[in-house]
Amino acid sequence: SASSQPALPILTNVTISGNSASQASGMENHDTSSPSLYNSIVYGNISTGSYKTEFLSFDESSPIIEYSLVQGIDNTPNNGLNGTNPDRIFFNVPENGDYSLINTSLAVNAGSNTAYTNAGGNLATDVDLAGNPRLFDGTPAQDNIDIGAFELQEEPLVTVPDANNIIYVDKNAAGNGLGGSWANAFTELSDALAWARWNKSSWSADIDSLQIYVAKGTYHPLYSPEDGNYY
Image (tube, rainbow, N blue to C red; front, top):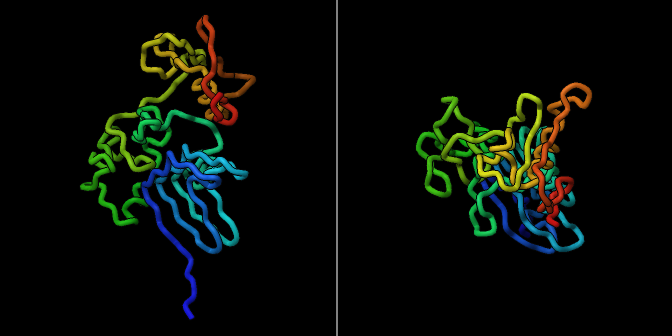
């Protein structure tokens, strides 16, 4: 009689997003089926049932997740990103099916070149899902591949508080939106609070605590910086 064999797929530089299901809207693994995810994103899927999570593994399933972002899972011990912290600023326009990375996404330069080439990829000649070079030749000369199916084709922008460890929020600001000055303030209050949560280990409450200045006005945060749920 035929015997069943476990599924052991290897997913490298894959983006799984925009799906919906009663549970495990991103991926569900049973028995001994154990996928390996490298440089991949499972984020922004909707589960409507009792298990409101994107990624579920049952029985003896033991997925390998490295250099990846999986919503609901802290992958930092395996060189990935912390998917338990809310951060809506990964994709350009996901509601329109655009899952390319914006230039402030934490997924930029966060992948493993070795994981990609081990999967048979060629960083010198391969292209991403949009047909752009799979490895952007930026600064420094030896760049890291981005996480996910798309490669940002420019240098990423990074939020840096000002000299007094202040980030700024102004819903009417028209700058780069990185929060380092009034001119370049965050325009969404939740983005500033989520960024502070992501980077809470970067300062001491006693010596160099972070401050958030908010311009005068009425603000209705778009989502909760605690759990990422939209209001």
